[in-house]
Image (cartoon, rainbow, N blue to C red; front, side, top):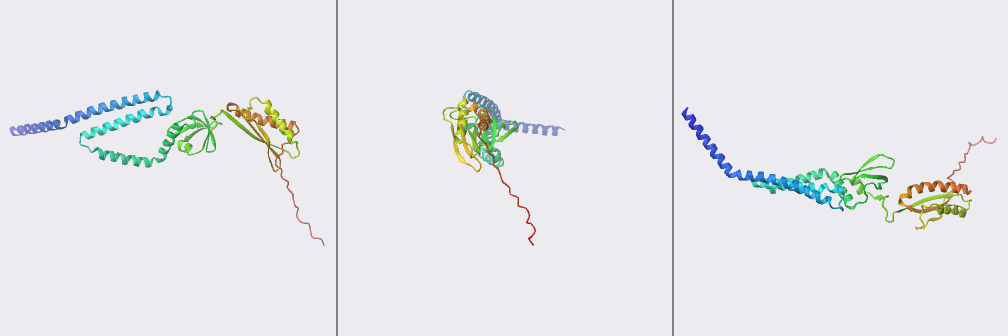
Length: 288
């Protein structure tokens, strides 16, 4: 029994000696790692909030961009903190960075479609071809923009349905912004066909009178009402006027109604394509 107790004491002494050696060797590293993690993570949070506050004070940067720089700074500081902690324990951080780079490349290749939306979103937010509330034409369809994002833009069509547009589709197409013009004016282009037997000068006079009576039509640029072409069944008159951008839609709709009514009241016909069909009957019986 005494021998067993002696051996246990020797084992405890050896274990204590080994633990003391380990603590003497790695204790400061462990303590330094804990302090580095605490300080690094606290610094990451503080720098992230400080960056976000600084960005929000700049009016030139879009609201969508405000949270992004702070998040990038926070993640970057945390990554550097973890790498610094690992390096204290002899981990080869160069190999770790290479592994992380290879993993990032693999993830990037797997998510290249999503990343293309992010890249397009950054370009849209940087160059601002439109803003929230603008009516834009993308790939032949008209949308009213409701929300901008890094992956998609939320919008709705003029008749109501909501649309979610991938940024890569928007940036890869020709964008027509109906809400933005250099002079804040828009042009109304219409074509009216009259019969070949109608009086062209009388039709032009009627259309010019409508222009003179409409206060929403601008004097400059000057209206253009002129014979444009001779069609298959009508003489085509070009009706081109300018209005303030805010009045364009209702002015366009009302002018179509007023011009048609006025032309008909003035005895001017508005022909439509007609087709003559000649029916040929079966051949009669042969003469005998």
